[in-house]
Every structure is written in structure tokens, then in C-alpha cells.
Length: 174
Ligand code: SF4
Ligand code: SF4
Image (cartoon, rainbow, N blue to C red; front, side):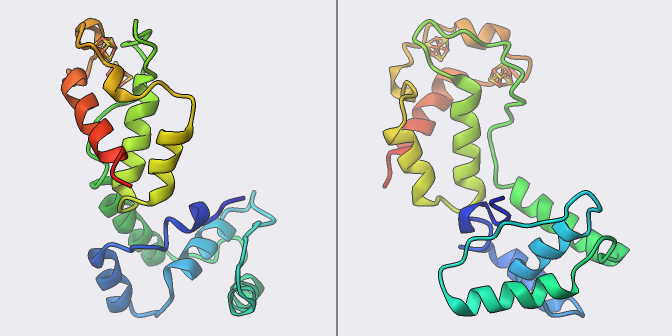
């Protein structure tokens, strides 16, 4: 389910990724690569892909018809790993979600706030991550009172109170 992360993976594709795809000997769209990568796994038997146009449905069916376990070559997997690294390099708060910083006396869900922010950066600032932040019941990052409790426990030595200001500013953009 959500094989393209609601379309985030294929919207606003980083130029470095576009270049890699265009230079690869076999010309495939990122959508096709995503589906092939999933079908390559023997444990995946069905992909639930939402479409909004008949052309997309036809294209999905074309890809699904020729995809099967072990469809990806070693070179194909290398391409995917390179693309993965490009996307990951855009997620810039090195939180490992260990939760040692929790609980926050203000009720901030620190790892989840960082996770949301990283996703937002990773997929070129999609509006839906901003809206999740603004409309969810999570305590917003601007409620941080800089008590320093979290910082003392973070093995990554993240400057959490300062980062909270950035998280809030960025996720309030839309
Ligand atoms: S510094 Fe901010 S985020 Fe950290 S524990 Fe205190 S209030 Fe929570
Ligand atoms: S302690 Fe640091 S690395 Fe661990 S969850 Fe909290 S912010 Fe992230």
C-alpha cells in the first residue's frame, strides 16, 4: 500500500536523480523503478497503487505485467541504492529515534517532529507534511521552552531546542 508514498517519491524528483535515470541504459520512469523494486521481493504479491487517470492505470498494468520476483539485476539495485543515498542526504537532522530525550515536559514528541521534518526535506517540502504538522494534535515545536532536559540525554548531541525553532519555521511555511 502507498507504494509511491502518496506520490511524494515521484513529485519534485531531485535533478541528480533525473540525471541518473536519463543516463541509465534502460530508460524507465521512477514510477516504473519503484514498482519493479517492490515486485522484486518474493514476499510481495500485490501492490495497491492509487491512480487518478486512466493513462496511469494503463501504465501501472503495463509495468505489473512484466514485473516479478528477482526482476532487478545487480546494476539495477546499484542504481536504486544510489538514488536512495541522494534522497537520504536531504534528510538533515540525524535523529535515530532512540527516544532517550523523552519525555519532554512540554509534551513535544521530539523524534516524531524530527522525522516529519526530515520527510519534509527529503521529498522537497510537500505541502501534506506541513499540513500534517499544522492540523495534527501533536504539540508544535514552538512550545519548546529550552529547558535543556532533552539535550542532556541525546547520544547524537543534537541541539534540540535550536532545531525545534527550525522545524517549526519550516513546517509552518505552507
Ligand atoms: S528543551 Fe524543549 S524539546 Fe527539549 S525537553 Fe525542554 S521543552 Fe522539550
Ligand atoms: S535522543 Fe536524540 S537521537 Fe534520540 S530520539 Fe531524541 S533527538 Fe533523536
